[in-house]
Length: 338
Image 1 (cartoon, rainbow, N blue to C red):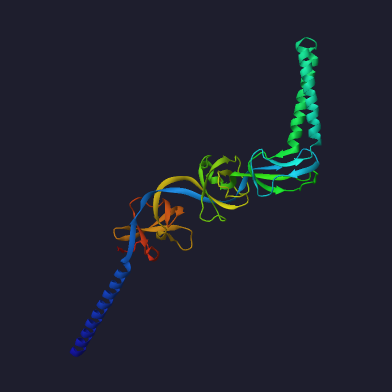
Image 2 (image 1 turned 60 degrees about the horizontal axis):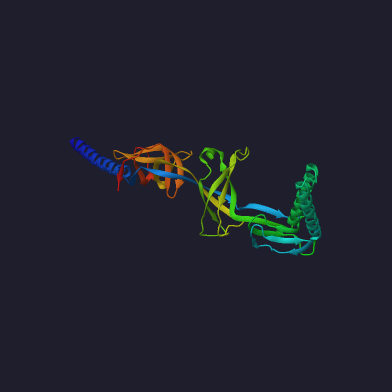
């Protein structure tokens, strides 16, 4: 019996030793998991610029269709498609028979006017007769000016000829304009901006413009007009951007991207890889080290720029945000900063 008791005691001691070793091993493993090695940064306040990029298409600042007031034969063509023309430059000449007749009539009316004027000053003609002659000479002058404009077709703007629809010797039938001239210094573009930003957009805000067709180049313009209504379908409003385009590189129809600054704010900024998404929801959070423990904080994200996120709420300046190792952590886990 005594042998049996001694044997049972020995077994109990061995079991106790084995249990102690297992408990010690488990505690050691738990300590290793709990004390996760992480990197952290202090949350800092920074000025965040709210830049947004919009797609648009270059438009000519002005488009003029040039044609005479009535039909007639085209005597000569003096400009071609792609040619840059100055304001007032002659683009075409129509047949001038009516113009020659009008010049002769005006010359005759002018002689008659001077004769009646002299008689009127001597009292030989009544005031009503003189007024009638004076009105006649003004009408004759206006008719002559109008015929000159419609015989010698001039460009009303400085620009590039984008279309020529008739040849020399053709009869102008009034079906199409003779020329289309587009002003491309400056150019403009319409940008659709969300109605949520309506109060942020002002005339004069600078805009950076880039074009896929002109890689590596950036053009600076500004907002010159804000349309007063909101599109009910898209919930956007249009703003007109003007770019000087003094080198004439931007051309109507080009696809461009316009970067517009919609203000700035001073908020907490953290690296983007410190943001963790909660599975099964759209909520984002970060881990903050407090007394050696990772504390989960739900955050509201703002703008994303470069490799950083703006934080609108959830943490404060000076919080130690875990930037490496956050994705494997649990709320309340022990951490060791490296």
